[in-house]
Length: 617
Image (cartoon, rainbow, N blue to C red; front, side):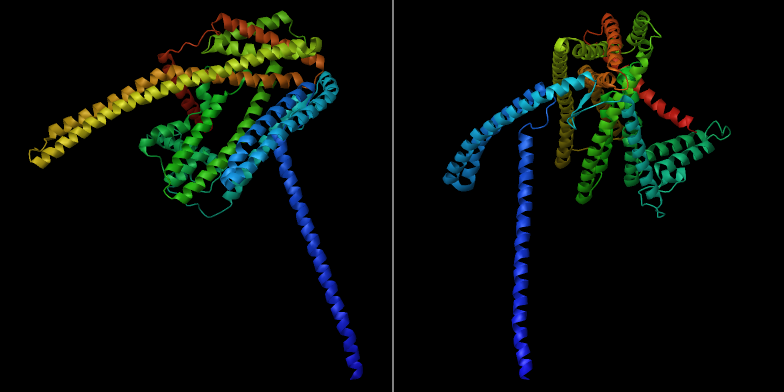
């Protein structure tokens, strides 16, 4: 027993020591965890401060001395402005938080910021100038080698036109593969999706889960059965084929299919919206502005892409307006925002593809001159003949002047930097480009103001006329009500009722005619704005096209210079022919001609839809 008590006495100190050790270890671990957390918070704060600093001051690696000077000016201006804003904002914020005491505290902070921020801007600016000067030697060397400055990576690289084409093709293939995979995954679900109406799905004999590819395949299969040419003895074949085509048009478009799944077939009152969905903006604007002949040099106009986006947005808005539950509407709005972001990325990709396609078209166009198979005089003659054909089309002369100006400026700038002493001629041409850009932007602003003014005028005049009609009808209603109260009202005969309805229809028709007439009056201003946008779009696109063409490292610097010479020749001939045809004069805006062209554009794009359907049968 004594021995056990003695052993127990030994165990007690041991357990106490173990507990102390555990507590010490836990305390140490907690301290280490606290330090790690503080370190993490400090790193997070430093990262946020770095982001704020980089957003406030221009600290990215400058390409050369000029870029360093530009970066320095930005930093100094931003620092000065931020200091001035802080000097005003800090006392106000302090006063709101802590009254007079907070005001003076904020004033002190504001004064300190007003001194520190400009000084920091100057220091960063001096650093950027030093970096730019230090990078100038590398810039000169890289430029002579034909390298290009990558604004994202902030380094000099060799650019290859064919490589970018391959990259874009790969992105397109991956995008299509992703759509196919997601579509097949959706189709794998055997359960039918619940939709408002499934008549169109039944016409095509497909599931409501069918993918775009399955719908297209089913359309071809069903269309062969009811095509009028294949069923000459069936008087209803044409109607069946038309109904099948309408079903396919609805289900093959993501927006119209979603609207159909939710709301069923479009009401007869929405016929115009249905027609709008079938109009191809690219075809419409190609006919409207006559851009088919110049498409190899300008691609698809930006205004057409924008119209396509606006039309899709309009469909989405109609779907959202038909929604009654707030929760679902909020979800649709969130999806709409996400969709717009995706569409913006898609628009960037589409513009890159447009630029690469034009660059390759131009490379092919000047190839005979480049390889010597066509002498310079024959090449000039060919450019003149091509320009004369373009000048005969709608807005042809204006297109020629716009394209010719852009090509000459880009070629002169490149050759100026390559061949003149210290690139003086290149800098002079760049100044001309900037002046043209300012003029183009001013034209857009002034045209936009005119279009907005014309639109407001139309709206006010039409609204005023409608209000007069509404007031007249309200007075008639009040008279009838007063007569009913006084007991002097008489029952109207069928002839009187018919006459009133006829007068109402005539009034509505007159209102519609007035609105149409007023809209026609605003067409010239709208067209002027659209063309101003086209000019800037073409100039910006050709600037990037020429940069790709002149930077293509697959050929030597000498060959690139020869490309620039060829492009300058083409630009000169296009401009001269366009100028002789009146391309430098203001655009004539004949309302009748514009209406006729718009009608042809609508009919052409609708005909294209029909032809595509027939060719695929």
